[in-house]
Length: 243
Image 1 (tube, rainbow, N blue to C red):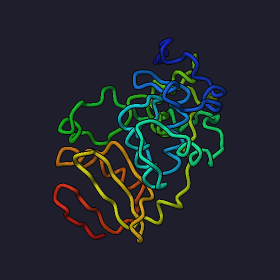
Image 2 (image 1 turned 180 degrees about the horizontal axis):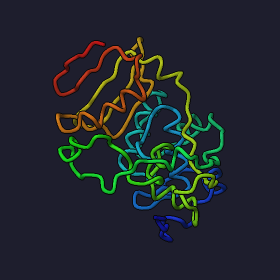
Image 3 (image 1 turned 90 degrees about the vertical axis):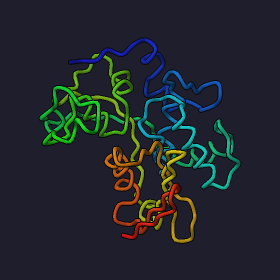
Image 4 (image 1 turned 30 degrees about the horizontal axis):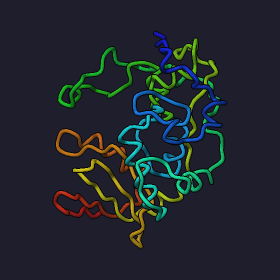
């Protein structure tokens, strides 16, 4: 089934607009996707300060990632992108979007008819699959289904060989491979990465932790820390786990 993009989503969200957008207080929005919001989120993600799902909105998670990035760059923290922060992010001058051709693997499935809404409801599912090719492709590129649809009006995501536009969050593993300590803050719902010199080199938001959310936070460790992280610090108990 093809999800139609609403005017609020699709207006102005073209590759050209996104690649040339300048993030500012005026061009960012908490309530709707903007070209500047997409560009800022992708640049933060590439720098290993992930705002979570790329949806083009400058919400709480993007704000957390921005503050963490400013801290890592030893710049004044701010709720909006400053000139100094943007200058640092613009070192990565690659295009924000890229072309992608849907493969047979993308559409092969199997797909779930409906995803249970609770973690308890998921425990008996043999395989936690996606509900559609569109959902799988969106996750593959760290973006929301709404943004994927808005960038590809009229495209059929269930058709192998279809050419579509996606965001390019392809960073390098350079910083993540230096990770020595992963710090989990339950109150702020964030994960921070530090190297052996205790320098902040990456971050992830949101992060949910606890018995019910253990599966949710683990991908953050796998993506950023992988086999490199040596210990995890939980702010609520200051309990250290050694790999």
